[in-house]
View (tube, rainbow, N blue to C red):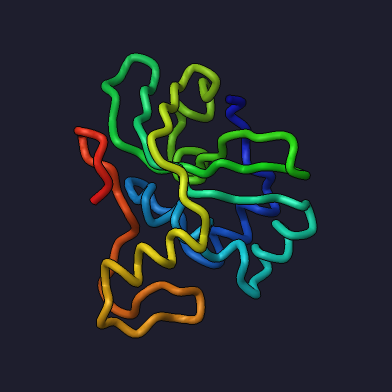
Length: 151
């Protein structure tokens, strides 16, 4: 699958909506997936480009480094072209910005925004949800452990 850079207008609007922090790939990619259907500048840009954003969980193998659990985005344009976006590394990793095509992504799970909302409802059944379907309070998006299971 093609690894692509997120266009600056989309990346900027996502970073305004939710700061993209180093080491927070699960939250960064989760918010990008859930909020792509919301009423935000980010969402409007995504819709205007006819993009479908999904949450990917799996393993990342950076060149010269160990394989680690990771989350990124799978982006589909016009129901035809599909590529990987990685907002966390694009904003925070000089190595990724120099050698992104040498990184290896092994996808184990792909979740839509609706599937993420359902996961939250099941994981936090007693919590009130925000307008985007994210539980109030201290929560986390699905993560993948070293054995490949969602937690």
